[in-house]
Image (tube, rainbow, N blue to C red; front, side, top):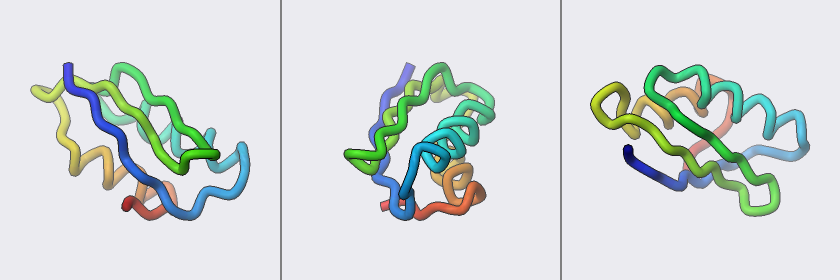
Length: 68
């Protein structure tokens, strides 16, 4: 299992947190995703043989938020 913390820009409310969380959890291989509005970041545990860091970033971008 791999763990990563990704900075997220554009979240303003709990609905944003839920949207990003659901987007990350929908990526195959993601075991857990915890998104913090206060820290503007997502902590993700995933199977590196199934998905990549870039796939996680793309899921966040497709949900309408910026990574960085």
